Amino acid sequence: MSYDVSGIDAADLVAVTQEFVRFPSPQTERMESEPAVQNFIGTCVVPLLERRGFIGRRDRMGNLIVEMGPKSAERSLLLVAYAMTHPASAMPDPYSATIVDRGEGRAIRGRGVAEQKGALAAAIVACERALQIGPLTGRLVFAVSSAGETGRHDAAIAILEALETVPQLGIVALGTNNRLAVAHKGRLDVHVVVRGRAAHSSTPWLGINAIDGARRVLDVLSELSLGDAEHAQLGKATLTATHINSLPVATHTVQNEVLITVDRRLLPGQRAEQALADIVGAIKQIEGPWKIEVQPGPFMYPCQIAESGPLFQAVGNSRRKAGRPPIEVLYSHGALDAGFLGTVGCDAAMWGPGRMEQFHSDEETLLESELLTGAEDYLNFIRHCVA
Image 1 (cartoon, rainbow, N blue to C red):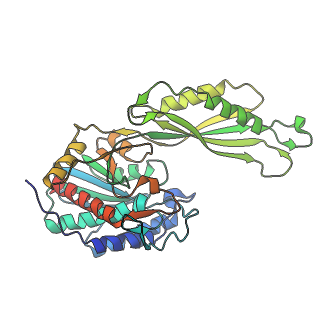
Image 2: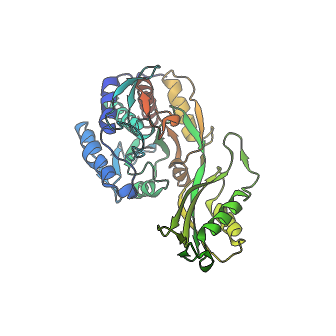
Image 3: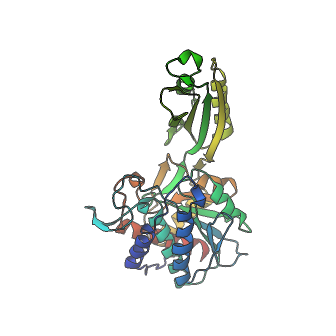
């Protein structure tokens, strides 16, 4: 049986997306507690939802949760979108949300439109249209996470803590070029602190230069074996130095401390504990006068869903009922909350409008046609799963 889910107002969808882009909510050192992010949820998203008949609540981290349909229903779906975007960085005029001609068609331009805010708008409009078509017989949870760029699962954990039961299926609303991300790598940040002894640089023999120790650390990590495991689509695990800083900030001074952060990408099935142990073991072999500490940082689970599993099958069935072609799949080297959701029994994947190659770029745009396709995909899926 097929069904008609037409009726999404494309102009309204574009206007909602522009409204979101025009309200800056960038990542800062305050992460999920950044006032701009919390204000975006509280003074932009909440009023818009209330005007459309949705009443939600905020959890301990300021995430917004809206529950629809009977809580006791056998079928349940979580649709989670994100409030936080990458900072404006070098992008000129990042928050005007102008309409531009991208050659392929009209597009919305602005920070976060391809990554978080286009998918957020598509999810809201799809939920509204789903309820207009008819009542829900299953349980639908729509959440706006205060994360989006933090690289950790803290906000997702808070959302699930606020729910009575974990939904069976989950969609992480994020730009994937409207492809279903059936697998993605996980990530563990590892912080290495190298300590020496400060001295004037005219008498370096009186100090212990932490920069020399940091060079040894980087050499050791560059030679560290990450194992022979290789994923057919994602390739091998990686380890990349992403940040380095030395102290004290002073001229003509042998440095007494260097801070290094490395990014260890995890393949589906790999454990962060083992990856950390391998790094610790390699650094322990370094000989010299330095004191070196290794500390785990933010972590995100890898993810892989089965094509025979409930989520993939539900997406496929929803598309067949709507007369759409089979879903295109994506294998992502980036990480988000789908992996965590899978560990607690929610079969989940990233899916939404927006091209990943646009993320964090100086010209971030989203085609209006792709935005509409994403909203229609969400609508078909919601109606199939919980209506």
